[in-house]
Length: 243
Ligand code: IPE
Ligand code: IPE
Ligand code: MG
Image 1 (tube, protein in one colour):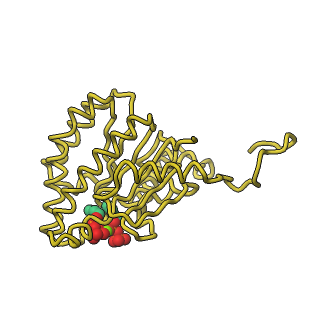
Image 2: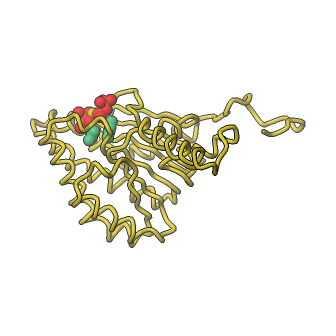
């Protein structure tokens, strides 16, 4: 079975999971942590190279202050509880997003977790917090513009590789499989550049219900996809010059 090297997930539907049980929204976010643990474990077992999880978007700052505060507290608690085991499993943990907007307490937990796991050669686990695909592209543009202004780079020499290297996921293969739980069929400002040729998979399951069996189903669906990247179907004819 062909496995994705990199999986990117929008973990959506926590609020609806909670509402369906007469619980407050934050109970759904707490329940979602267990689904994260199961998903990471399975990716480690399956020797997936990279997993990128969307935990909090640039736009999620627009939510009520209490929900935002609960989520931030949950991130701190989850780091406190999980980093040792992630490290033991050789997971390299990194956060992507505008971390300057996060509370100092969370920023220091993130820096410590990244530092501790930086040398690990197992699953590359990215958590997107205060992340937006447009923010990522704008920031990359700023970096490249600064290099042009310094004369290190000529504008006409700018290539896709320069842009890719200036983005948050620099150095990782583009996601092969994108999963969104919660039933919505949209990208919601996730990895806009990197998802250009990613296989999209949507499920109506809410994130806390997305278990190992659901992940395996997504992997099976991915294995049946034919990825053409603009070429025609079937094996390439021998005379074809590969681009
Ligand atoms: C995803 O679940 C978690 C975050 C966006 C932080 P939601 O909180 O969006 O849950 P729904 O979509 O309202 O059910
Ligand atoms: C996307 O979910 C962001 C995360 C899961 C972190 P949202 O619930 O914020 O997306 P929309 O508002 O339904 O597009
Ligand atoms: Mg949502």
